[in-house]
Image 1 (spheres, helix red, strand yellow):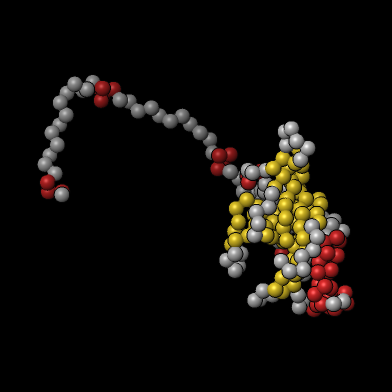
Image 2 (cartoon, rainbow, N blue to C red):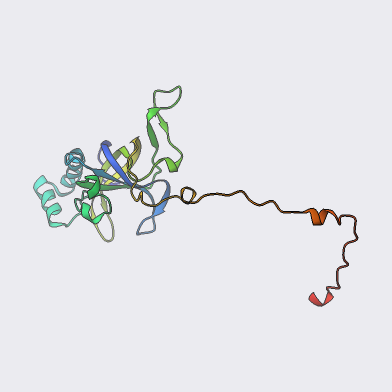
Length: 210
């Protein structure tokens, strides 16, 4: 990653589309881990925007030129306010969001310390992390240049899960919660037991089946 900025933390965001344990291929077929950070506070991304602008300023020489490139849409800017285009975002009070990704597997930790440690407990069960949870995300801003676009992105480092939240797409129910169960019937084998001493029927000649 060229022009890579220092590592910082997005605090108090809602996690969406978490791909943190098993990578998925992006549009170019490259395997990546990713997550979207959703902000309900308009100031959440202030530090990240400053870092991203610094990367562009380094690239184009002046702050004015960097801002011109952003406003003209000539470079990718990783912060989006089109929350209405995303299902469930407006209902959760989201005002802005950003997608972060990496080719390196991030570490996911709890807000609570591991037993006998002062460090956060590492989460390895991917079912414990879902879209809608609250969390903190560490990142770095960096310049990229590809065949179709160029600009600044936020590289995903690690994620800390801070609390439960309403799951996105919560309307989908689990099969085990929808259906009742009944005891399986036990087969009556008494008719088989009574003939246990009888000679079995001869097997017909199967030569014609070979």
